[in-house]
Structures are given as structure tokens and as C-alpha cells.
Length: 344
Ligand SMILES: Cc1ncc(COP(=O)(O)O)c(C=O)c1O
Image (cartoon, rainbow, N blue to C red; front, side):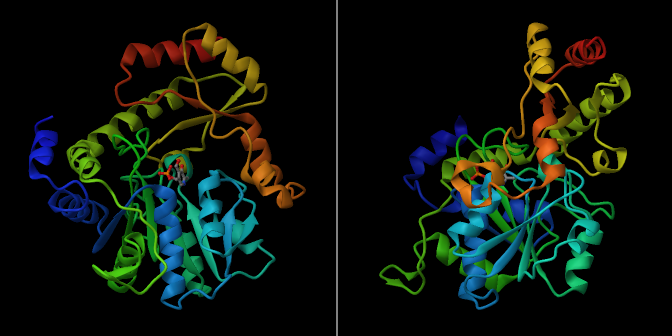
């Protein structure tokens, strides 16, 4: 509240020192040189792709490979930046090298997604590099994550896009997003495109958008960033309790390998009769979530892809249930959730 008073008194409600400070703090947290704040995560992704095109690093109407198993925003970003998505199957929750080897269609670049908070691992980035494919990461769900080798979320790709939607591990008081990169030229172009393509007050050299982070959000995020590590540790410890305590053949958990690389934006389990399970949990006072019920290629908005088949993605979308894993859950609540699941 004190910071909000300070912001009010400063009289500067767009841009300014609070936004600059958060960008510096978040770049340093992610171990990168540049952070460009945006209005939300979808814009962060689209702006990266627009900026790469403006810099002639992506051809116009590029083919961009995107996992079918993602939130619709990843795919929308490709469409919004006038490129063509090439959807591909992922056998696990996140992209693995074997998935990339199976892509038959040619593509110019690749977006991978740290879905559920699980980091796409180092070997995927190495594979893309060896095959001369530009790679970008949708890090909307993996703030503070680490790969097997310890690399930080937001530092692995040519550029990464974060969302600070309020429920994210690092959440704002409304919509906000950011791009992280080590490429100064790309960062400058992203910054320009996010601010009307503007060079100076009256001169615009790119077709830009208005996608800026409010200083109110920046202030709030600077405050929340201080507790992100401890929040993520609390999430990990809840997840560990679930993995040790849940023992029910009807409930499939994440493999240890994937769990070890997760910051548990959500804690996913997979249950065949999902509707009955969710009802059962509700009956015991436990709210669950779904991420997500319908995969992007089966959405009405993407009717041209409705006949495509991605069996692993589809079955995951049919069976996935998110258990509560907010850092403020207490031990008794976690115990109650485990016992209830084991009695299902
Ligand atoms: C995987 C993924 N990508 C992109 C986005 C888009 O972020 P935002 O809602 O901030 O635009 C989200 C947010 O929900 C997401 O979960």
C-alpha cells in the first residue's frame, strides 16, 4: 500500500522508474541481459515473433512448430504475428527431443512451452541449435524454474515470454507480461514494437502495438519477486508430499524426471473418469482445476485443424486434473487431500 501511495504521488502512471526497476530485477533473476515488459504474456510472445520478422531473422509467413499440447495463447501468438503454426505431438507433458525428430513438415523456427511449470530440458535446446532452428520459449508458467543442468527459466532460448497473470507463480494485480533475452538488438526491437513502433515522440518506424506494463503492476511484481524462490519451494514441498502420499491405481502422477524440473505452477494428475473424480473431490470440500479441457486443435476458433489427430495430447486433455498447490496450503490440508484421493 505504501508503494501504491508512492506511485500515486509520483504522478507517472505509464512507464517510469518502477517499470525500469522491475525489468532490471527480473533480468537479473532470470540470468539474462535484457527484460522488456509488456501488457500480458500473449503479447510478449507475439512481439518476439514480430520483432524477429522486422529484423529479417524470420521470413514473412514463417512456419513455426508449436506443441499441440499447450494453452491456446502459444498458437494465437503465431497467428497474430502473421506466421503459420505447425502443430506437433508431444508424448510427455512437455517437448522432448524424440518429439522433434518426428516432425515431418519443414519449419523455420520452434516454440517450446514449459507447461504446468515443467522446464523443457537442455537437450531440446541443444537439438534445435544443432539443427539450426531458432527456438523461443513460452515461459508463462515456469517463473524460477531450472533445467537439469541448472539453467534458469527465461535464459535458454533466443527469447522467452512470461505471463504475470494473477494466478501465475509470479502474479501481478492484473494483466502483465515480459520478454527476456540476451540479444540487445532483439530487446530494442521488442521495446519499440510494444510501444507503437515508436522511435521518438512523433516518429514511428514499425507497425507496433500498445502493450506496456503499468508501473502499478511493476511495483507489485518487484515486491512479489522477493518471495518467488520461497513460494516455489513451498510448491515443491507440497508436490513432494503428494508424490510420496498419493497411492491409488486410478490416479497417475507425473514421472519423477518431469517433477524434478517443475516449479509446480500446477500439480497435474491424470484420471480416466475425470468428471466422477472431480465430483468426489468437491464432495469432500476440495476444489480442483483442469488444464485444459479441450486442446487448441479441437477448438472452434481453429476449425481448420479440427480433423487433426494428436492422441497423446488429446488423452492428456481428457484426463488431466490440477490439485491445489498454492504456497499457502498448510500441512493438514495437504494431508486431507492425499487421504481423500487415496479413498477414491
Ligand atoms: C502457456 C501459456 N502461454 C501464454 C499465456 C498467455 O499469458 P497472458 O494470459 O498473460 O496473456 C498463458 C497464460 O495463461 C499460458 O498459460
